[in-house]
Image 1 (cartoon, rainbow, N blue to C red):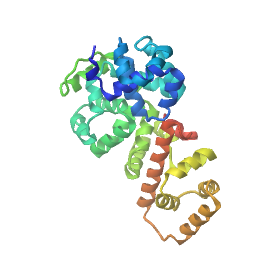
Image 2: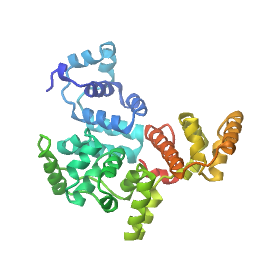
Image 3: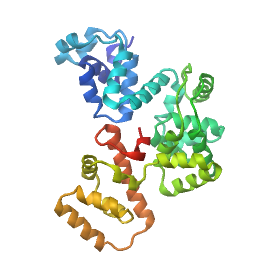
Length: 334
């Protein structure tokens, strides 16, 4: 067992959440991003035999609550499942729990999450495309998109197709992959099956690519497999899909978007989406935005697409935290 002085900040946060009870812990987790939830969830799943003295050290002023709420280290897997389901919903919680369980035994793969995207690309670029696909399916979508952007252009569509057609990873395959990573990073491997990959995973990665890269990859995928291309395209969340946001979600999104980026993004958007945005602004703000749009001269398509991508990234982060609900195609990003 770790001595209390050796506990990391993440482990101390896990101890605190385990003392709060399921509902209270869920409320805390709702305000965290997916990566933070995964890191704390991993720490929670590994805690065992935490002494009362250590709990006292972490949360001295709440020691009485600790005794009445829960016993730390007992039944943590079930506690973790209930808390994550309450905070994130059944589907997203299942995905994170699956990755937490894999992370217990795949230290080589876990090490990649802390590396720079360029370094990961350099590490895996000479591997078989199927291995690269499994690595990218395992990483978070935003990191995978960055890694993909650093890989040779002629490899990208093939790798995305392989991600989209992954239907789970067998223990032997994951074990072999972890062994490869462990040659670079110390640790022992013990593989566990995982439901990684699929069209949804591919769409999440493509969502985060630059517009020019996204277009080329989708064109190549559709040329190679029209049905698969259509399936991925249906899951890609594009700017005009913001029209499907409910009014509350749209208002929350608009509060987070810089006005200059919104102005630029709307130069290339559908009239229906413009009206939806105007409707969810104050009358004064909407009138000012309309005037600015009329006064704004021609702009490059690449600038418009860049601004739209930025707003979509904000929308996805808000959806991850539970602040808004993405409708329609946005369901790919869960």
